Image 1 (cartoon, rainbow, N blue to C red):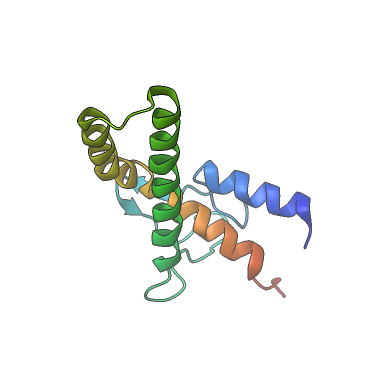
Image 2 (image 1 turned 90 degrees about the vertical axis):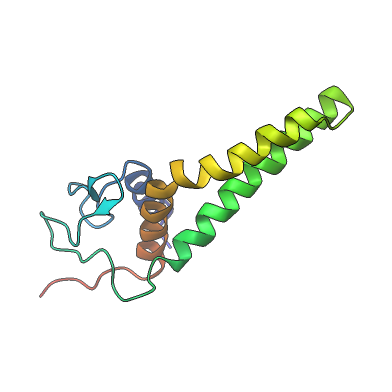
Length: 121
């Protein structure tokens, strides 16, 4: 695996761009994904259930941020208060929604690293 290519694809994922060409936008409106890239024609959803992996990405990021926040709070405050629990519960609802676009985009990039589109003939 080419590390530079993998970095490029992840960067495209973070920027919400087509993993193949880096030019096409993934979203035309909030929570409305384009079906394919307008520049290279890459179909974004290859099959039904394709974005189940994006759910895993979203859960891992969300849970890591929540756990990390809790651990830092406990180390600094030496106590778990109801306030921090309430804040973490609110974040547990907000973070997956806020990270929705990026989790799909990063999932597509990771999939493109593992299973690249075949070269055109």
